[in-house]
Image (cartoon, rainbow, N blue to C red; front, side):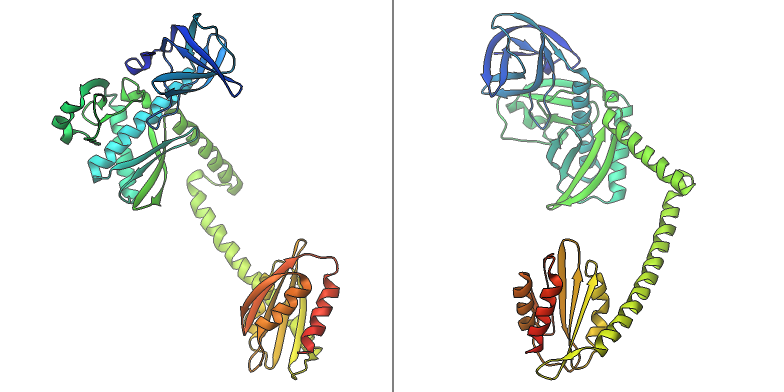
Length: 400
């Protein structure tokens, strides 16, 4: 049985140990020691990393009571080695985990919102709450969390039998009466108390700070994403540099960026509307030319065929106009480098069924599409002979 030195001394960075087992698995070596400072992944916390002698430790796991250090090279059973943590990794894990404890406590204390899920990865940390939170509530919880951190309160680890837990039920954020045996209790003075197997710094000040990044609706509550300590600082640096860069582009101060962006957005919308109006005017001129030369179908209606370049937005602009054309079937093709889109429209007082017509176009272009009797749309992969196929579709529709 490996002695878990990390359980009662989270600041211990290294130790001397004896290799008790070494097993090869998928090109890696699973090393067991008689004692270790390495925390194995569990309880939502990622494992430590570091070195044992000259072997790199990439991951640590506990399976069936055995703590397995995944290493890149074997170590001799019985040899004395030094197990040494990557301290920045350990500190990061502790900052995120204790930050999660305190933030969860803040939501519970202020709003009776319970943490029902905890996820930590190398980039971010999330908790799932059983209630939705407003932006104002998120900010209040964040402020309380950081006040507790900056108080630099002591964090203690104690052990008690599960039979004693009931007496502390009202003090604990999370109470689980199904736990049995000796339990490990992590307590923040005057704040959070809960059962936990993870590593935590001895004082809250080591967390540095907690910053909520975003919150999204999740099931019947919300998922809160946040960063602690060094991660929060690096994220703030990154976003600050982005803000400064955008501000420089606007020749403005950082605090003026929202106003400048709003102004730019309004200008873009106005230009978009102007462009759309001018584009529609040009399209309608082309439409009138095509309408003048439109051939008559077998039933006496006109067949208007236009080929445009683009992604189909132009044909959508024309739709209201196409629907007003009396006794006219319109077919608008939009040709792109990789795809051809088409829309078929029955004009006012025009008999026919666009569902029948689009089947013909689909067959000729090897495309797919459908719709309603008065309007249908589809598309096909681009082909070099699209003009020949367009002519073939036109001739087929004229005969109906």
